[in-house]
Length: 91
Image (cartoon, rainbow, N blue to C red; front, side, top):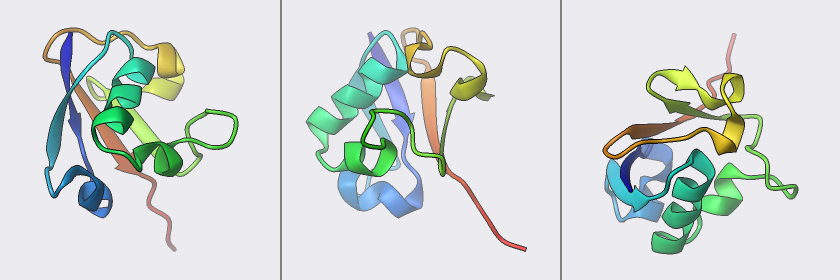
């Protein structure tokens, strides 16, 4: 099924400048893998060596952080939006 991934400004060079990209997948992990297939370079920015989301990368589905859902196994439905949000630090 087709889902939309929202790309943060910092990563748009990997998506050809696009703020949103259509990908295929029934879970967040499958959708992000398809994002990597269509736009190489995302995987190294999103995942650590163990294949887990990097600590400074947040991924949301329907305004919910996937870390509090089923992680990369969180299901997505047709037309749903997956948002990649880099963590913001400061003081």
